[in-house]
Image (cartoon, rainbow, N blue to C red; front, side):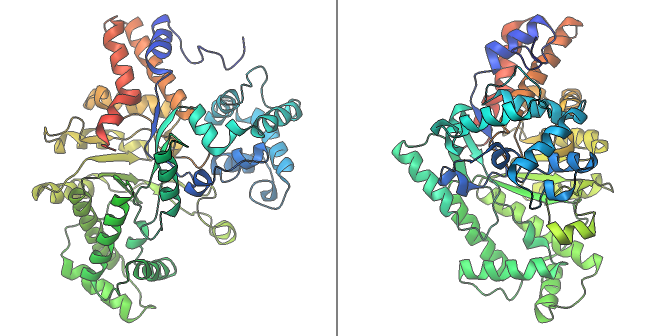
Length: 472
């Protein structure tokens, strides 16, 4: 039997039924990703497998470096074929790493290659077969999305982005030229980077340019940000996303945040203390939470990453190149105080929490119940396994914790969190793991052997919950 086959990861007859009858053919709502909207708008055609598969994939780069592959074959000046060959030589060493599953799922769909495993021995035949497919119209950026039944995608966009490519995609939707909706997500992390002048001030200048405002104080910053909220909302945005190391501590007044901002505006070389940074960041995040509620958006919080650990590589290659890891620190109290501050004034909107450190699983799982208010089913969500946790063990653990401490049936399911048009098999992977988890529970006598009841649960988690929750 081929390694990737119709019943891959499905260990019981019921698991197979649940997947094939209730999950396999459902559309995909990919509510958090990093796809470049320009490539969708221009319907990019990829010249070869490396361009669509290896460009920007820091998961693969980390594995290649661990396998002794030189940087020029990851992010450097090696040819596309040389980079692909370096990856093909690495794949046999990824056994038991989720990359081995992902790699062969992505070759299976959309390329239809499941009769061989990627290795130096098969590299030529797989390269040729995939490149032949990529030359066909249905393997363009849009073509792949439609092949994979992607209904909606939410990209990740800075508040100063023009959203011109989203507008072009919306026009294609309106004319029927393209069926998949591609909506922006508001990612205002740079608004909080008060302690990093090389990031904050160029971003602030860009914000002033797109709004026509001059930011002289904290109130001016909020006015400019709200203008961008309105602009994004008009372009179909219904989600924000906030990347945090940890939640900042404390309830801080506007006056305190204003003092920090005025200090750096007066002297851009001024040192910002840890206390000043935390005060400013807490108040910005709080005001953004208010705006999320005002516009009726869902807010997402990704926390627990320790980024750019390797200084030399960061200076050479920049961020998001594979030198991030899991961080730790105090989470529960700061998270609770932040959400409570919003909830006390009725401004806690729909919220999804993604933790990168698995030690926070039960913190998040119990935090949800503190702020459910009976207005929206599953209003506060435990997000799917993120980044280093979006593999079989991490997804099973997340679903088991949510099952024990909340309502798995209300879960809004999987996303790709990816820059690759080949990553939609992450949804298939998740659906297979979900069905297998339930099938094994029935086999052990932990759940009733009721196909209809469990099938409806699978369909809800795979698609319907997200369709109802995000209000696109």
